[in-house]
Image (cartoon, rainbow, N blue to C red; front, side, top):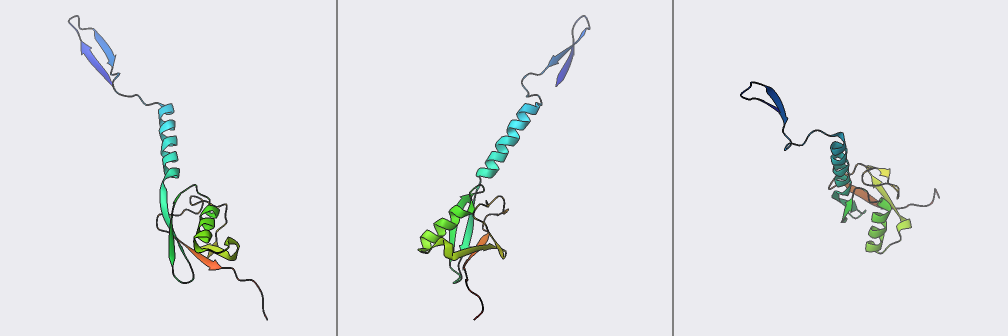
Length: 121
């Protein structure tokens, strides 16, 4: 912001207001990076529902790999993780995917189903 003032000799001078921050691309980049970090560190609650309808909730960061969640779920249930498959909207979820990659939102549900092995008799 510039202020114009005229003195007794009617000369015009310009004064820059130094109290207000000036636009700076470096500041904006830092602000955007901070906002991005905050978004990634944001926690959300997801639900894993088994075949009996029982739900287990997990509070995770968007950067948490789903394999970590699935391992904790299997341990909590007392079963081997290798016997389970985890589905989001009918699609299998891989261990290395994150909540951010899956675009999970707070309260979303993942289905845990027993892996079926075998064929026709």
